[in-house]
Image (cartoon, rainbow, N blue to C red; front, top):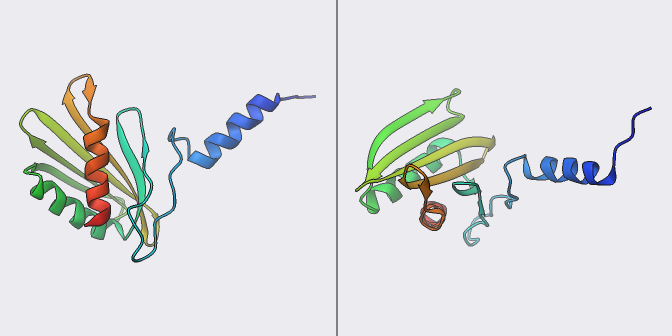
Length: 134
């Protein structure tokens, strides 16, 4: 007979709710809504945005260009279900990972790395909010 503690069950429920990303985010907002809630990961910011991966990628590219970030890498994968953009500005590197969650919902994670072990979560969140508003 196998028993589990209530804490183990609670942890399992939390991980299932957050998708094991370490943060809970809201669903994508409807038209006319404000910027969606975002959460933080160990190194950046994450949220679910309204739009397909190609639509969100186009908005992300516009935001990167408006911030003076040079796009160095653009990779698509999974039949259009995912996209990664990497850019540089000065010595900082920005990486935006977009993954399809539903037909019109894209999970977006933004990382802003200043140094090999230093991450700017505030700047990552600002870029994410700019993408949401674009």
